[in-house]
Figure 1 (cartoon, rainbow, N blue to C red):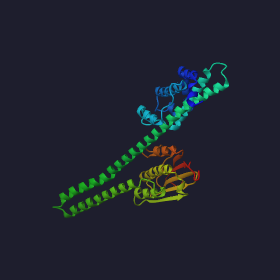
Figure 2 (cartoon, rainbow, N blue to C red):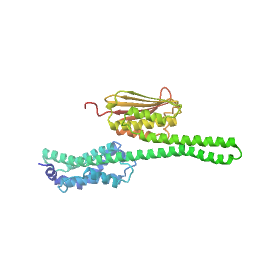
Figure 3 (cartoon, rainbow, N blue to C red):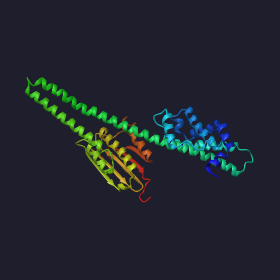
Figure 4 (cartoon, rainbow, N blue to C red):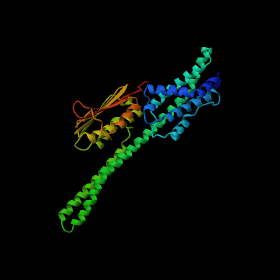
Length: 363
């Protein structure tokens, strides 16, 4: 018997899903509360939204069981539905959505099985339970896939926004400062040139130096934009980053152990983003005269550390806003890894990221 025919053979299960939805939702909500789901305790989903989402899943499952709908939405359609229906800037993390989906599936199966007439054969009970589970989880899986794509697209947009904001800030703080000095110095040069040649010459030289410094900054920004990719290798990308980002007078070093070929491209790219933020934090906040990046790669995991030797920080106090910790933690989490920022035993701070390598050589 084909899948469609098997699904169409359970109208009683379809009626149970429709008529006893409130019972299903109560059990679903209770389960979410038990494991502290962010869909319950977080700020991103109201109870009405949670109920509407559950009702949509159960309604579609009932239609398939009753033979009224031959297939569920394609993933592509689901993505557009998610984007159009979302009132929030970021959907729940896919892990959270999947756990919630399993809870809804269990609640639906439990209610349907309890609704069966006494004397229903074990074979039929099992068949109905499996059919309900298959249809609900098929729907949930499609929603989670769409949610995951939506989640990643949102993260890409956030990263692009942060990059634009950083460049805007640096252009304002550094380039605009130099150009202001150029303008003021040239104005003073005009004022002094007829009455005080020495002061006029000083102001002209200052304008010239500031203009050259502004040109150098533009060159740095241009090089950084060209070198923000890791296609030439993580080590080369990090060395380019250190040359551009670490100011003169601050020593730096990049050390590697292991083979880069163990790193899948997507892991390498995300790891670079985390380490880049760590280097920028060390430059901006540590006051250190030395910054090091250490990367250790094995077939199973990569461990990378950004270490400075500066003022350190109080581990008991929350990190300062704008330090980029949230971005670093989320990038590590997306790859199943961990991120930590701790005082270094030798002084300064130690930012460490650990990522599992699910694609081993020869796998």
